[in-house]
Image 1 (tube, rainbow, N blue to C red):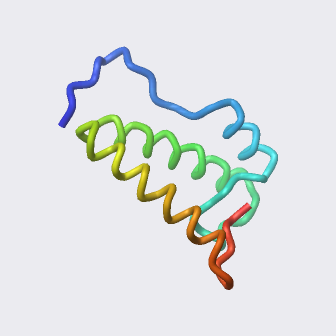
Image 2: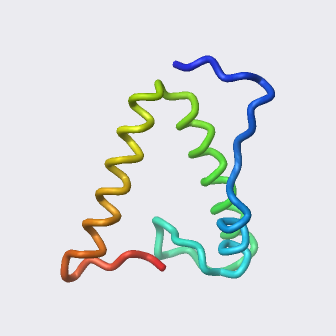
Length: 85
C-alpha cells in the first residue's frame, strides 16, 4: 500500500461532475434511473474509485487502468457490445 499524504485530494473532474448532473454520465449499471440518488451514487463511486486507486501500488493502479481502458475500447468495437453513453 502506498503512503498517501493526508492533504492529498481525491475527487472528479468538473467535466465528469457536469455530465453526471446533466444525466449524461457513463455508468456500469444500466438499471440506474436518472434521479438525485443515482447522481449521488455516481459521484460517490468515482470519488471512491479515485481514493482506492491511490491506495494501490502505482504499478498495480496503472495496470488496472490499462485493463479498464482496453476493455472499454474492446466493448465499443465488438458487434453486440455497446458502450454506455
